[in-house]
Length: 345
Ligand SMILES: O=C(O)CCC(=O)C(=O)O
Ligand SMILES: [Fe+2]
Image 1 (cartoon, rainbow, N blue to C red):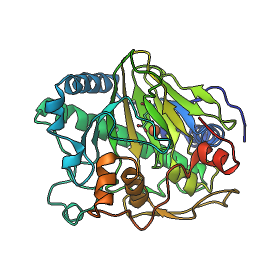
Image 2 (image 1 turned 30 degrees about the vertical axis):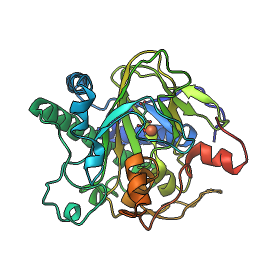
Image 3 (image 1 turned 45 degrees about the vertical axis):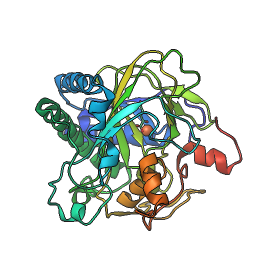
Image 4 (image 1 turned 135 degrees about the vertical axis):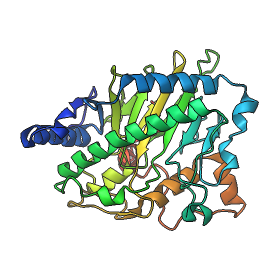
């Protein structure tokens, strides 16, 4: 494993739909990037650039509304973690107050869905604003990026020595969240990070953004810039791929520094189905914290520990942490450095 990466590799995934040889080249590049860096710029994904432009336009229109209007779809109105996230709602383990607002959605299941009705904390319908164009464009973007994610998951399966379709039957209705995030530019905000240091909780994340700001921690604990590359997704390995790969692929810690201009970003967190028990499919590297976790329960538990409205529901005994849960910052470099007693700012 390299110890000091200083830039983010580019991986062209077009070959995943090519000959066996082309596919093998992509799989090798995915494995190397996931192992050495945990972050990559993914090109050759085939997503129509016009779809991203349309998403950005709708997102700007949504956030431009007065707070009152946005609070009509406040995430705290929902039982399945969907809707508007005002500034200060989400707090990571270091206790940083993020300078960001967001609109969170996921796979739009019907309100009659039995798991939703039974109180599943992540599955069910989205909480849409009363705006047909917003809904149509956001749904179209979600579905298109989800398809890219399915191709990538096949690539990672091959990289782990499994069949390309090994996870297909466990991707039927995953709690894969899409966030529309707005980082306003506030010159008077001193030291306020856009988003505090964390790892992502799922298999991997596919992110597009409009400006620099994202920083990635290397194995030495230094922050490396990951500015956007035209028409590419930033893809980073999350907790579940770290677990599946026995620690070979690292859930790289990242943050958004105080922005120097207004910024929008769009991560889609690619998860396996809620009830899938995730455990290593290859021999485990030293220092891996947990042997097995349920994908949706891990995600729900991390969310319950970082969102104020959920922390309050836990404190009031209205909900409780799922059986399968670990604390914050258990995966990624922060955790590895922490275990070695190195303090990370
Ligand atoms: O805005 C970004 O570039 C990163 C967002 C992020 O890390 C997250 O939402 O988990
Ligand atoms: Fe993240």
